[in-house]
Length: 340
Image (cartoon, rainbow, N blue to C red; front, side, top):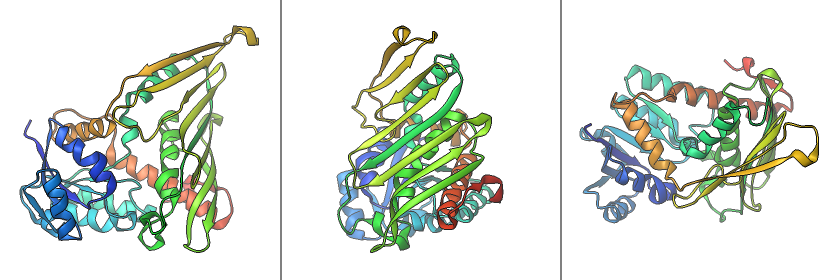
C-alpha cells in the first residue's frame, strides 16, 4: 500500500517517546511534517527524527502531502485542531482523552464524517496482545460467568507546572489516567455501562481532580470499580472476577515495547480450596503504539477493515466520561440514557 504520510500536531513527551518512533517503524506510514507552537521546538524534533519539514500547526494542515495528523496538544485544544484537520481532509489520530466533554466529542465526530476522514482516540493499550489472551480465557469460560472488573491506574506526582495541572487546558487525572481503566472495563464487558457513580478528589489550589473513584453498573449485573490518581505508588492493573476464577494483569495500560507482560489465571471448578489452580501466561514484548498505528492505517487505506469502529468508540468513551463528570458535580448516580 502507499504509505500514509503523517503530520505531527504538538511536540509532546509521548510524541517523542512513543508515537513518532512508531510512525517511523511502521511499514504503512511516513513521517512527513512536524508542527509545534514553537518553531524552535519543531526544528529540534525534526532534526532528531530526520524529518525535512517543520513549522506551525497550520503549516502541517496546509501541506497537501500530509494524509493524516497525530494530535498531541493539551486535551482542551483537541476539538479545535481535530476540526481544523478534518476541514483540510486529514485523517486524525487524537491523543487520549479525546476531549473535555461529550458535546465536544460529537462535534469532532460530525466534522470528520462531513469531511470523509477517520478519527481515532489513541488508547494504544487495547492493541496489546495480552488483552486478546484475556478475552480468549473469558470466551473459553475459564473463569465461568463474568461478575466484576476492578481497575487501578496511578503514579507518582508530576512536577509542578505540568500541563496536567492546568484546568483551562483540560487538565485533571480523570482525563489523564482514569480514562484507561474506564476504557478497559468497556472493552472487557463489550458493552456500555448502564449507570455511573463517581467521586473526584480536587486540588483546591489548582482546581483539577488529582484522585478519583467510580463504580459502574453494566448489563447482566456486571460491575466495574475504578481507582486512579496522581501522587501514588505506581499501579497500572486490572482484575476480572468470575464465578469460577479470576484473571489479572499487573501492567495493563502503559507497557514499554521491550516489556514482557503476564496474564495470571486462578480458577477452580470444585467448591474447595485445595482444587484451586494458578496459571501464568507470558506475553512477549510488543510495541502497542506500532500495533495501533498499523491497524489505523490499514483501515483508512481500505486494505484491512478494523474490528473497531473508531468514531463510535470515541463517542461511547466520551459519553461514559461525561457521566463521570456529571455524577461528581451533582453528587448522584447518573444513568447513561440521560446523556444525549
